[in-house]
Image (tube, rainbow, N blue to C red):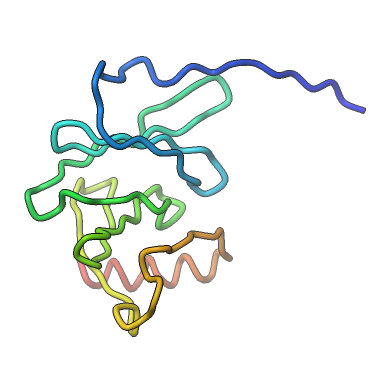
Length: 136
């Protein structure tokens, strides 16, 4: 049996003294830590030795109630849900932009606020990436 080690990993050092909504999220096999502060959404990823800041998303007035669902693809783009207005968004890490998108039939589905992200096959992710890139 391999030797297991346990330890304590503190929260990110850059956390402000007062922040709003905080949550842990699953990010493609990694643990994510998200908090909202002063109209920003900050996403951290837990690596082997500690927390690494992944991105900081400016929340515009029309995007005040975003919830991070997970990574949209292997490039680290972030999938988000606006629970108040039943809208979905993808934050593009490379271009630092937020784009709205919709799924066919999603708005008519009960329980649509309770979306879960599961890691899928490479083919599925690359298919969605190509469709998203065509829209941009």
